[in-house]
Length: 171
Image (cartoon, rainbow, N blue to C red; front, side, top):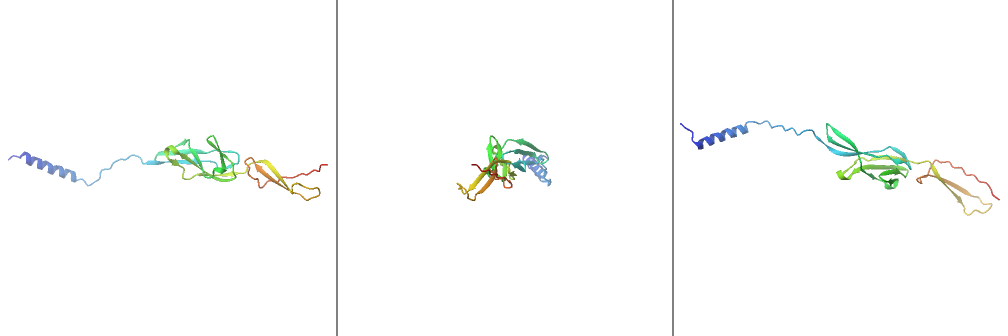
C-alpha cells in the first residue's frame, strides 16, 4: 500500500500543526539592560555674596539603570528672577539680595532640570553711603535731620550697618 503525494502533504501538514501548538511556555527574549531616561541636574552653592559670581555646574545622567553615566556638560542657565543676577559671558553674577532659582537647560537634548538649585544671595560689603539732610537747604539755627543709608556694590541696602555722622562747623 502506497501513500499518494496528496495524502503525503496532508500528513506533513498535520505534523506541522501538532508541532507548533504543543508548547504553551512563552519564549523569553533578553532585551538587555534597562535604559535610563536622560536627566540634567543643576549644582550651585547654597549661598553667595552679592557681586560675586555664582558657580553653576550642569551634569547629564544617562546610560542604564545598572550603569548610569554622569558627565559635566555645557548648558544654558534659566533663572527664575533675572533681576536677581547679572549675566556675564556664559556666567552669572549675584546682584539682588534674596533667593533665586537656577536651572540648567540643554536645548539640543530638549532637557531642563525639573528641580532647580536655590541660591541665597547675601548682602555684600559696604561700598557706598548716601546721606540725606532735611530740610534742605538749611537755615542757620534750624534743627536738621540726617539719615545715612549704606549700600553694597550691587545697590543692596545694608540694613544692619551703623554709620556715624560727624559734623564740624565752618565759619
